[in-house]
Image (cartoon, rainbow, N blue to C red; front, top):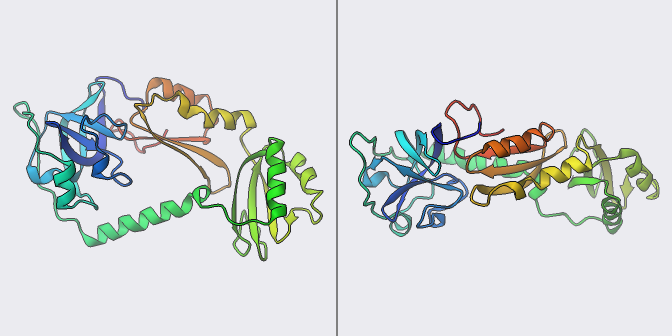
Length: 293
């Protein structure tokens, strides 16, 4: 999935223009047109060459296929998918200016986009809401009992905690339920050591009205540290976002979003256990079946 100069690539985003150049705002689901810099050099924006877009296609969501030059995409084919959900005349006037560059003869013209169907827009909103709900680690921390916080602090001080999250006690967590308070699922590197800590709580695994559920981590402390530090080895010009989530089987996963995957990044990811890191590339080879490596 690495992208090198001369490779055929594919990207999706909002077609924009700034300073007489065309570009693609690729993180259009989370970033507005006001986040397109005049120089088109943000990690979530890629410059395009060889394009003849109609004025009313600026601000449309498009699929672009072309050749990676090392800094931009030389466009070979464009497919208009529809309007950006947040597109307004005011946005276009403020963030998308009139292009002055001239395309080479035979450059692909961009057709006028179709109107955005209301059903498709509603589906996109629903999908975004579902994605937010899956990222449980990003929810605001609940008000846990003081004794629960003390136990978590002790486990963390001993270097046993990979990550944790809490759900209301009436909700299942890893096929377990608790009545009242919260169920706190804690991914730990050493279950035996963590059990010894919980043995001092009294009712094993219960702290006040909360229940602490230990989940063995597949990753060692060193592997977790390496995964969390991976973003520091990605060039700033390519790093779009970094975060963490908890998988369906209650395992930590570090998530990186980059402009494209370099051979160096692919090598670094290959040294880590499969599944501990998910890398999403905004520019990738058309043959890729998914955005992740």
